Amino acid sequence: MNIYRRNFLKKTLHGLATSSSLFALACQDKRIPGALHKTVVVVGAGISGLAAAKCLQDTGFEVIVLEAQDKVGGRLRTNRSLGVAFDEGASWIHGIRRNPITDLAKDAGMATFETLDESQKSFDIGGVLRNSELYQNTEDEFYRIMKNMMKNGKANESFETVFNQLYPEKSKDILWKFLISAFLTFDTGDLDKLSSLLYYEGEEYGGVEVIATNGYDNIPNYLAKGLDVRLNQKVSKIDYTSEKVKVQHSNGVLSADFVLVTVPLGVLKAQVINFEPALPNFKQTAIQKVGMSCVNKFFLLWETAFWDDVQYITYTPEIPDKFNYFVNIKKFNPNHNALMTFAYADYARQTETMSDSQVIAEIMNHLRDIYGKNIPNPIKMLRTKWQSNENAFGAYSYTAVGTEMQHFEDLAAEVNNRLFFAGEHTEKDYFSTAHGGYLSGVREAEKIVALV
Picture (cartoon, rainbow, N blue to C red):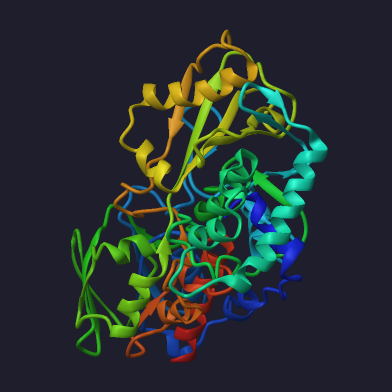
């Protein structure tokens, strides 16, 4: 979920979230006699799995974490190959007040920088600097319409269908296309699949937005300390027919009293793990009905900077969802002349079929329209391919047509008090966020602790 989501909700629907006391409740460093000699296998070493594992181990459980990738973090991945931290997944802490990630980031040594939406310049096609008053007025109208449009939503119609019916002229307007793309599609999912009733759902924390400057992976690396994490262990089957749950993975089979599954929703949709017996119908329905978005990120490095000294440079191309805003990395990493840009929804998926040179050419078409044809190509580019990543199959969950809020609770429901589920897609109030993933892990640890 990106920087605009909190503003959207703050200006329209929600107040401050309640204090996140879950961590304090479940993660007391206090051993419980009933936990001793009980084993928990956690599938996935993302933030939810690691949060749960840490809580459970501190309580006295024997905990083994199985991770399919070669490092912990899941969708909290940082690439430092160019000498600067490029966060491939989560970048921001969305509202630092009472957000559990805030203190966790400090403890983990994750440095942050406050980002300001106002520090931006918006450019139209032809490199024309957009009038700031027009931009602000249109943005304010956008928020008003987002607040009210849900009253005309229908369970079987997408956001795109309803919006185009209500606002045919706006649906063709280039600035409106940008706002919907960068402020809504980025935060949620494909507009032709996004629920016209539930596009606004979700709570947010108050306070400023901050971006990680030295890598979001500091958090999972910190949580993983002292845990038995086994890397490159892909889980293929979970058999919970007996009292002991058997987990089949790359190196054999583990037996446990409890198993916590924290793989992304996209992995559950792809049926990578075989459950025996099959998961209950209500859970299978929820897996099918909740949407999984795709957002890809692109990090470009130059020898010298040619762009404006603002935090954000936005551009309104004819085609939405395509490299339409740029984060100026130089603002918080002054020694690196770099920009980060994004692609969303179907265009994000399309980029995964494109070569690096094709992607760079498309990005440079936009930048050259703004800054002139003589600006140089980047010397390096890093990119993500989240849809084709077999350990994610997408970026994060969203409310698709057919999604009901109950489905998030169904995704979180335990089965037979032996099989448990965590991940951002299991948090009804905080789905699609890193803090939602974290809170879900703590929530499931609490459930398991309560059973012994």
